[in-house]
Image 1 (cartoon, rainbow, N blue to C red):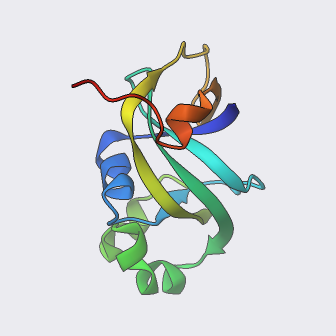
Image 2 (cartoon, rainbow, N blue to C red; image 1 turned 45 degrees about the horizontal axis):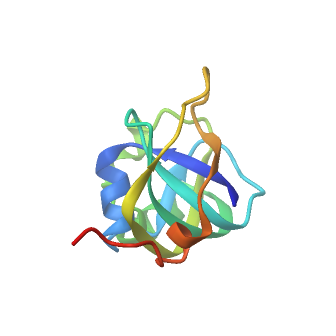
Length: 129
């Protein structure tokens, strides 16, 4: 199954997949919804999947109120490298048992399309014994 996969830095990806972070902060909106892959930046591997369910523009008040969902300290609002701030809501986050390798296309910085076998997506792949 071909999935749009979001590239995320290791620290934030682990927080997402470990259940501590459900709101990814980005500088632009997305209209994508549904199942997406989650790529750990710099590894060439899809490490997890999630359902992308919403995207909202955030002002400073929203950012502070939602800190427990995005895990960025309130004082870091001023340091964000974005003109506009958006929260991308992710639900049903799950780490894949075995990462899926892919060839990273030149210039891709946010999204990559990756063919992920359905048995991997749905957790039915064989485990090494």
